[in-house]
Image 1 (cartoon, rainbow, N blue to C red):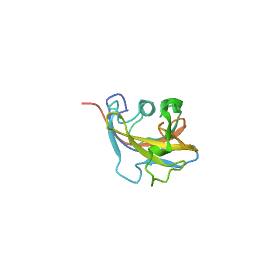
Image 2 (cartoon, rainbow, N blue to C red; image 1 turned 30 degrees about the horizontal axis):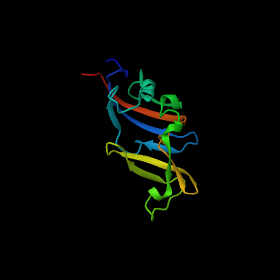
Image 3 (tube, one colour; image 1 turned 180 degrees about the horizontal axis):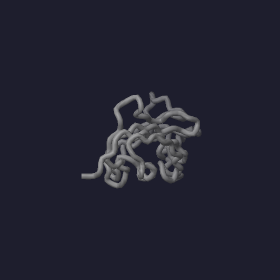
Image 4 (cartoon, rainbow, N blue to C red; image 1 turned 90 degrees about the horizontal axis):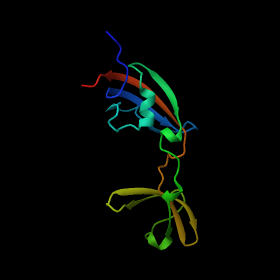
Length: 147
């Protein structure tokens, strides 16, 4: 019996954790149901997938994912200055507050208030993990070849 290694199209069942440089866990399946996906199906960022290639059932490793292979670098064009009057009067506008807007197609677009300067509020629409090097811990449970 040969050991099946992960390659493009492989069906993978695994536990994972994504951690910030200080060790804070952002997301994890270790205490939940394992993640199941097929390599290349878009469920996992390509920069994360490339570290899985060649791993097999039973492997347990940690990888450092640089921003370029994770959620990218923050884009200054993804910040918007908005008038305080554009927010509901009863909303407690403060730095760090996540607010949800609708984009032109009506889809939810989350942003984080990064600064308040007088009557102006700066909202950052970059992904919250943009610019961060992440630790990706994986424990491979099962690997099946593509059908």
